[in-house]
Length: 363
Figure 1 (tube, rainbow, N blue to C red):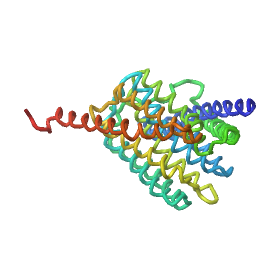
Figure 2: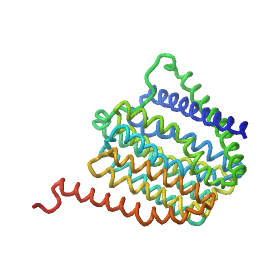
Figure 3: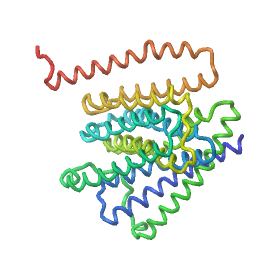
Figure 4: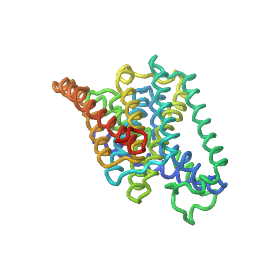
């Protein structure tokens, strides 16, 4: 087991380094050909931070472990919002731009609903995957056209968290080499990670789905964790939110789209994922809109709630895997007390925001 643990850690390390190399090379190359920083941030960087999920999902699907593939995407999207935004918001309250609230979050929610509908029959077929991949192409093209038409907005947009300019990677040949090395590292790292994760699942007697939802999901979310945490520490709070929302969107459309297209039989979706985890992912996505809408920020207490929910969700998965005796009581507390209190808090916040905006009844 120690040998597989070393390979697991090594695979994670190579994945993160590969993603960094790919993002730097692609962003610098796009900048060299005159693509605006706004488009680079919303496409290249967002896609780049999702490349570990894509590498793991493709390899897992081809290796005959589709539960790790689908669990990795679902778990990463849940972790991106609850864990990553939670950590970033605890560091400093996150300001959310109007564009993210009105455009990016609704698109992310729509993509999540679409995935839920497509997965209900237990299979993301090649046709389904083709729909997802087509949508990510259309979305990327839309962002480019939107940037070209809104030159003023692009000029005043917040600076994206792109690799810092340097002299050694100015030449296009170096930039292409960084992309090639990054892709190779992603393929190699994903292989080590998936193979080690399968060994862990069999050794501890837990399902591939739970391994994908937890260990692999958090591991492949390390680029997003690093990006959002550093952005929050640097005061670039809008970037912390935008990178997470963009990554979630690419995880659904691009990662599952490409994985389903290259897999001979599509992606099998386990019953457990259809009954619980996909719905949790949708609930987490829906929770973003009212929280971001109230004051256009994610406050520290809301970040703390996010972290608490992620701990509770992870705890539920562990207890369910072990069929622990406290699982019924744990579920009762979550459904009977925690969720109603959270819903009530969101409703009260929305009413307060509505009245502060001048739309509610005046005394």
